[in-house]
Length: 379
Image 1: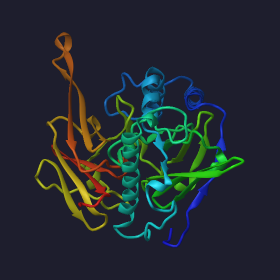
Image 2 (image 1 turned 180 degrees about the vertical axis):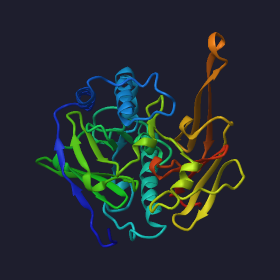
Image 3 (image 1 turned 180 degrees about the horizontal axis):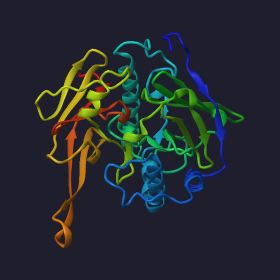
Image 4 (image 1 turned 120 degrees about the vertical axis):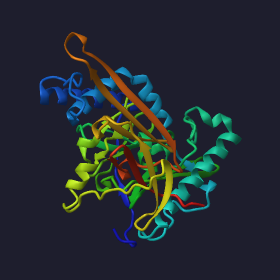
């Protein structure tokens, strides 16, 4: 995509179902597809620790969706984006962000997001009644503090059983003809305009919201659906994910399995293989300069001997990286044999929320290395 290329408008499809009903139908249909493909929902219990299969992950995701339905719907509601009155930030909805190349392009998108987020906080502090209700401009979920915090919950399984990027916008009070959804490299904008005419006067109000799109998204495949209860659902598949390294944790958030150092060494001669990450000898998070992205996060985590890369998971949360390990230990033999589970969790605060698919993670000897580009400036 070149710097002169214009944004593409994504068509909106209306759906009479509510957000919850649409989600319920998606899970039910996905369950039927999985049963039809395998004859039965596969059980992951009893599999050896190193066993990993995406079908098992999908089946477990479906089961947990039923078990934690209310919790899931609460999370979806909290993560719904709210449109911001256009007059609150003196910028046109399609104002230039600069060229698509260079270190300043992505930070310019984040600066717009920060401006809109600050506007929402001011609205809610000045007008508490906006925290609920169906009126135009009402704000039900309280906006998060970090502009990239939404990334920790943005990846879910789609109705095709593959991983999708999903975001939702509260557009209650608008019709499908009042809304325009457009996308360009690394950004998506929802713009709404509502006009009211009477015998004596006419008025119009404009609302907008821009969000950052990670490089991992196939933005040519975006789909938009407006539900009967006024939620705009926007989703696109993830480009060629490595499903063998992906899993979902107990909270159904996406996590990744690190590469073993030996696997990295074996693939070093293959074109496109991930390069070996370098140890600095300093445990914990640090920020390093990087010629490709400007700045990058580097975290080194000590791992107890006996844990392998198959036993470890790395998950990105709001302004933190969470590393967990779980290993079944069998001791003794015969009638005196016993087993127990050894596990740990370590959480490290980092400068900003990181997109899961930008993360590189490798286990070298007894040290886990996690690296990812940082998007926001150091200022």
